[in-house]
Structure formats: C-alpha cells, structure tokens
Length: 136
Image 1 (cartoon, rainbow, N blue to C red):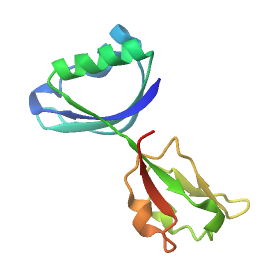
Image 2 (cartoon, rainbow, N blue to C red):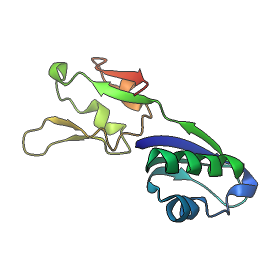
Image 3 (spheres, rainbow, N blue to C red):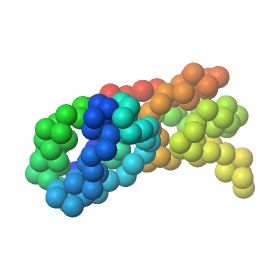
C-alpha cells in the first residue's frame, strides 16, 4: 500500500527521529517529496509511505502519538493531454519537475509520480486542461 501524507511538526517535535523510526520499527519505505523543517519551529513534510496495511496503520499511530499531525493527500492532478498545445506555461511553475518539455519533440511530459499537487499548473494553463481529483 502506497499513500501520500502531509506531516505537520510542532516546534518541540522537529528534533525527533520520526522518519528513522518509521523505516526501522515499521518497515515503511519513505519518499520525501517536500520538506520545510527547522529546529525549534513548526515544520511540514510531504511524503509518500509504502508498507503493508498493518505496518502503515501502526506507523501512522506512532506519528500521532508523537504529537505530529498527519493528513492524507487524497487529491491528484489530471491533465487532458489530448487537448494540450504543449505551450509549456505549466512547466514554468512546476518546481517539482513533474511537468517538463521533451527536448526531442517539444511535447509536454507529465510525471504524476513527481507531482506534489501544489495546483500551480491549474492556473498557469491557458486552456484550463488541469483538474484536481479527490480520492483514490
């Protein structure tokens, strides 16, 4: 089972070895997508966790018991590529590099695995071809 979560750390939890514990104790594979954590300040972490359902549930319980907020990311970005004119406007705002222009054929590539659902592409596209979907 693979899911994305946003963890919000209170200032007193930023020095805890949460990720190490998730990997070692609960055998959870972690992919850190975006992080903003500074010692002594509130921090946030967007990550993807992959594990058996049992281990994932136990890991999420551990996070909660550690005083860290954990919210699932239940939305995704969809692109109507058939209508796309490959102008590249969306690539200018995609700091996750999920949207790129292929140098060989000048066509848009959308790597959904890299997408962090920041939604900047939805306003950058002049044809409104990006939509946000909720749920799996």
